[in-house]
Length: 289
View 1 (tube, rainbow, N blue to C red):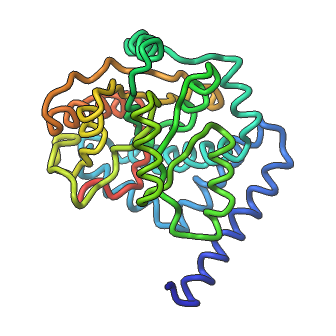
View 2 (spheres, helix red, strand yellow):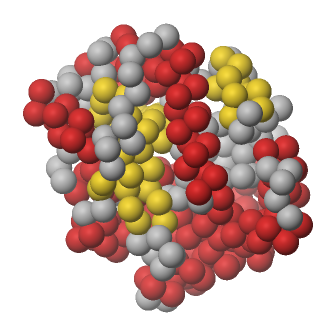
């Protein structure tokens, strides 16, 4: 059980977010999304210590960047995070825009269509890039069976409204834990498509490479793909220059091999994507420890 100080801190943080989001909701969508990006970049990031963490990660992974390039990313990365959260809390408008645009594309799209026709399970390997819920919205808009595993937030007060917000974009959702895992596996074995993240440090994961640095990477997406003969594809929602629209890129399927090789292929694919869009990956994560 958390102590009272932690609970009070959670309540204060949750109250601050709800206040900011409440003001943002008064704005039309086209102004709300960039406004939340500005708030995260200029208010949340400095208070939360994100700026220094971004600098530290860039010093490890991209020491070739100039100081000006680093400082631009220090502001752009939280901006993208704020926009993404505002989009999640604007579910109807967000999903309606995705549905009308039908932004799915990429070399793996035909493989998804074949998997749908054959009722083959699919593992959608996703990262904290662009807006990771853009791909769920795009797949659900076509009526395709996309579910996702999620980790409940440590802040219980925040979690009480965050889960309904992400559920409104697409469902089913499966919380980490025994009950969620059992339901997730039933869904997958029945031909469902499961979105799984793989870009955070996992203490129990395999030591693989990312930006040519050693880091622990979860093997679960590859393990499940092999166990259930599921298609494994990288997928991401790439924010476009207007800051509001997306292209949802479906990468080429990852060939079944040993799990380490499959996950290294996903790490390599993500690295190429991040190098092309440095501002869209969540450089705040402690990816290297």
